[in-house]
View: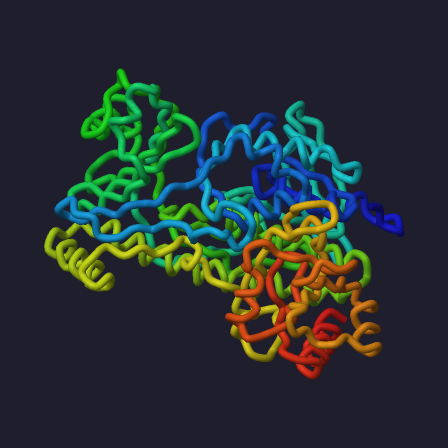
Length: 521
């Protein structure tokens, strides 16, 4: 796909930072034919793991881009996490939703970051409209009414300026772009020191470790255990008052902390890094033509593994809106919905993660005993299971219809469907633009007036329920159950798979489409 008009500036979008969020942003832009420059001051992918969790929403997006096959060899299911109380008793489980999976993929997964990040970079570089320049640093910028001028320096010392319509800053927690814009973080009040340890465990020693992921809510030393792909295992260990973070990273201290489970003869120490787990969100996500995304815009504790997922959600939300504005399909005001939607979503999810973190980080033995009793009581006296998916909230504001909000802002399901070409996931046949999905069991009729609106907005109509020329039969009833649960027969779905709104009949569908037409204009 190529754009019909030659851009006035050197690039339409410059992506600063080529980590996972930046690389996915570049691919999303390249997939739409947007002239893009992606830069990073580091030439090589960092060779040790940092992020370790990914979920079905993110894998769905990567599959839409054709990148899933590149990363799947380095991904594995995320097993249930068992939470143990102060006395070592099981108090609850956090698991993933059961099959049939709502988005067509394993809902919770772990991955090995270095090869996944390398694969994402390779995928982005393959687009004709994307230029990737590694070893290139942004040293400053100015913006005007119609462009951003960026001052770049490569690692040979050569400097040059480029211009862009827009900039996406994916340049990490210490973002130079955010600092130059003087955008402050709002502190959501979570600040705890932890040590993160990654191991490659010998095959014979795997049996010494827990069979599932585990959270040891021991007030003397809260500890998290995560099972990564293959023989990769991670411990996250809370540091105590008076412990020097740098000293605790040394091999001697790491093995002392792990002695309860494993010895130096059982594994190779891959990484040990101390962090302060924060809950921070940028006070602004857009300043003129510049947008913050990923860790440049927010940081949250890692207790359900959503850090990298949040960054990729950011760029998944932003790029399709940038595309509409660059093509002249929508006014630039549409871009304000990016910060409104993502900031509120990050705040809500971070609040939920903080609540889990406060439970885990309780250091007072008496308070920990009360906590354990309360959590067990919530399960009727037995450990209950909650899912990671119910912790992640829907969108609450932004480009959503103003009507009833039962389904609005939720992720639209992706069932397996039967087609004349065989068994496929819905996105592969429905596409990823705006879609009107109809439940053919009792779908509203689409008259000529509504068809004209659909055509004008370039919305594809998808019929689920009968294998006709323009319809598909789903295999497991996921979508039928979704329609029944939300008492609707039509769903208007955005390019990022979030539901703009639902309709019960022709009248509500007409109102929904009229609302969307006004909002996108």
